[in-house]
Image 1 (cartoon, rainbow, N blue to C red):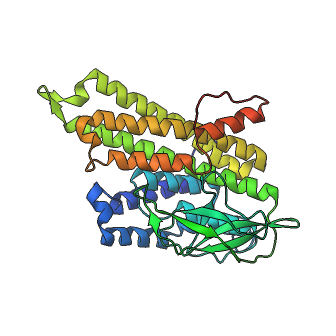
Image 2 (spheres, one colour):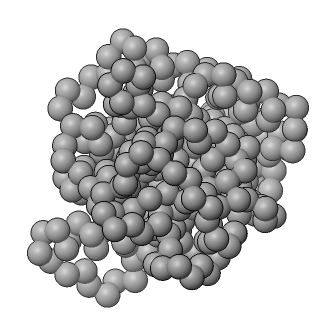
Image 3 (cartoon, rainbow, N blue to C red):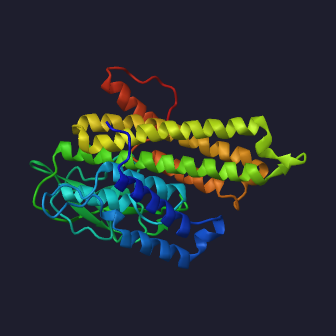
Length: 345
């Protein structure tokens, strides 16, 4: 793997960063600014980033690699961009694998515990499922069993949304899918490869959250004064921010490898790389975001401080498709080991 980004990837990353910095929320009250949010959504929509995993007209391969998809996810999360990206992106990849590309306004539905892609075991509808990243979506994709694998179904979104993560709403819906159609069925390898992509993008999202939280803490430490000097001059604060920065950089390496593996390795190996990345980034993101709150002191525990928004997004992304515990258990099982009862989540 060549860890260097190409000039085109560098430009893509920089463009996503500038767009998110321009239209993303700069304080908590900005999250209620509908005009700003509409401009952000329009900018992301016109960029075509949500369609990066749709098929190329000629080859049928995705328009962009997992690396490009992850780079955009990282920069949007870094500035807490409150627009849909993850849901439409992975919905497009799932639909491409099923030979169906008309998925505008569509996200994906997960099981009630967010651990797996939602589906039906038979003709009877299951319990409620959770549609993620629902802003701008009217339906969510679910799996339906078929004789030779899976087909895709479409669940209309008609339920009220919930904003546990203030930047990405979710919705609870009944799993009563309508047929979506397509030219091919999804195999087990297709589903595994899709999961590897989704986990890699989630890991990149967590990297962006960590970098944004570190920058928030650093900027605050440079202006907050105590005992006649800025708190950034105190060694204890410097160590906190330095450790958080190191954790974010380590997470970036794992997330970048997972994103590369999506298109470069067989599905089972790509999934293993993605699980490694998800396990590390899920744990690291929580620690980094809590460190940002600690650096802010008392104000870090208030609604007005953006630190809690970063923490909310980190906790949300960590749980989608399984948190650190589930990912570590998967990795251990692949190596013939058993996870101990250590209370990991």
